[in-house]
Length: 121
Image 1 (cartoon, rainbow, N blue to C red):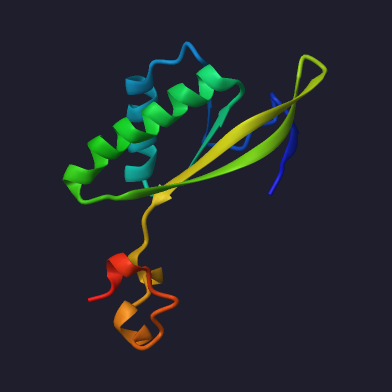
Image 2: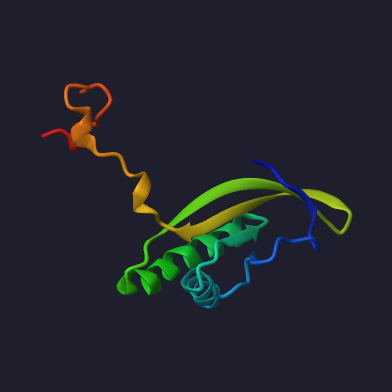
């Protein structure tokens, strides 16, 4: 899914991360929003910014796991306009992990071509 937006027209809850962002500070913001039950969108443009965003997501997992909250991260591209110039951003949607969608692998017995070897008994 791609979004086309002006850099000023961000979705509420969207964190803009730059290469100079402090990953621990961003991680605290992510953890706080997740604890409030909100999905967090993170937007980064450039390799350095993406690096800081990924570190922040990993650090936030360290904040949330001890209190029983696991998270998932869904990356996507977004076409944005910065100072009149079109750029491609990487967006990360971070949300609490739902265990409801996990498949019971025992239901697939006999379907060995579907189940990876590491899950077969």
